[in-house]
Length: 160
Image 1 (cartoon, one colour):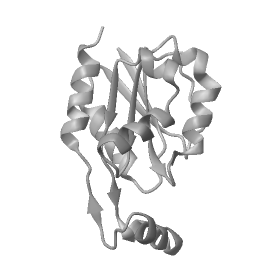
Image 2 (cartoon, helix red, strand yellow):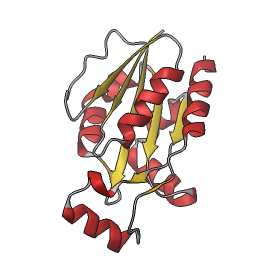
Image 3 (cartoon, one colour):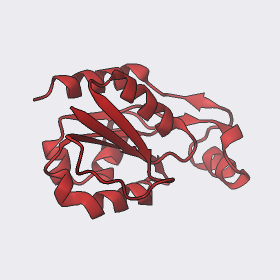
């Protein structure tokens, strides 16, 4: 099986998740960062996994555009979705549901919430101020969960 992980990473956490996920998946796996390459050709892939992160309550615009531009093609592929976000529990589930269309989620073989990170050295001044005020976080912190990535991959690999 040939798979592609299409993602957008603002500060590196989603890229890290995509890299770890690619190592766990069976078959040939390509990774494409939408911030560098906007419109990958999906025709040669059996499976498409889409990932992004949450900023100010929303997934990146480039991920949304990719999904909108490829919606019908995505319905013909083996699908998976993941999200990197700092929230957990019901808040994370709500962000996930808002990030990806319900009709695509309904046919997905695997879905995952991989946690998030606030790495202040990777942020600009305005981002640091916003994170401190909105999230109440004043120093580097992480809820990044490698076990969730491995579970996602296991489920995806076993799905028919």
